Length: 390
Image 1: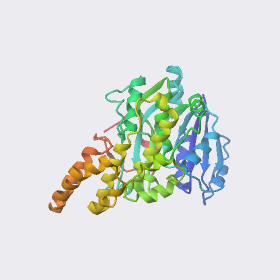
Image 2: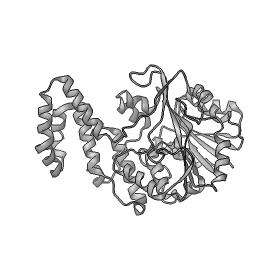
Image 3: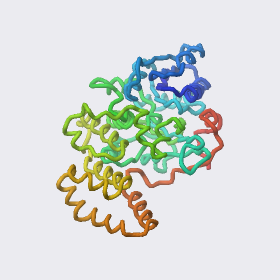
Image 4: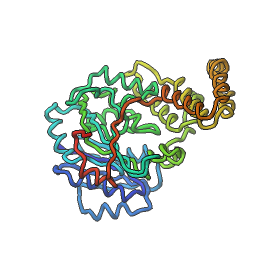
């Protein structure tokens, strides 16, 4: 069985080298890597050539393109039976291919595997944490399960509908999904497999909608890196605009007027999320039972506007609000915020933090953070095991 690993990259050769090594050091030979270079200034092609390994192929865009286009460029070169997407600061755990060759055969070749992953924050990337750490994302359908199982259609549909309602009940990163080429080809008949400004938000939900047999594996088998050159670093350090520029993925000029009319300033992440769900609805609406919850998106954006700019920033959005939003804002929200502004600063901060916690789209769970001494992805690769340890 042949596995394809997609590795899109741009000017992060130091990280890319480590990601490639986590594949080259596997105890299984039938794999390929597709390095898709997004017009790097660094000599990525020279490095790949120096490895002299025919299983590692190199493609390059002539100019800087959005992240979604680069992902699709990589996918076009893949020839494996199953495909995994890695970022260039990510990696595999040891034994990945050998384990899943055996597992896929034992489960009669499911169309998709959704397995757990370690999230590895490099030292100094997250505010308040100078050392590195590993943690887990919340996956609602894993619950207390510890062994692989087939994910039922209704359970898969439920988490997709949560995504449409701007509630994260499982992680969308492609590093969690090992996907059959057959399913990818099926989902590519009406357009590119990766779509929207957030290709992982779109594709993972599309896969859960369309796959007939999904194998869920609660054990972590990949390492998702958060480095100082990643979008996650910019997001967690309140530099989201720089992260958006890094991805070059938010362009609303070509959107239908009906969609553009729904947009509000605030978090780029929420807007990209909205556009991903809009694409999902347009291409796979026949498989859905609900539509994108645009009202909740707008409420989340208004929350961001207030947190970032206060009451004055909210008032500046008044003319762009819908009548029912003006009614809610005028009768309840704004009077409450005016009263809140009269409170001592520390008490106000605690109340706002509690409010954001209650209405956040992200789950309120223990992520099992564990401090580690790893300096890089290869350190994590050498030490981490699929079995979680405290």
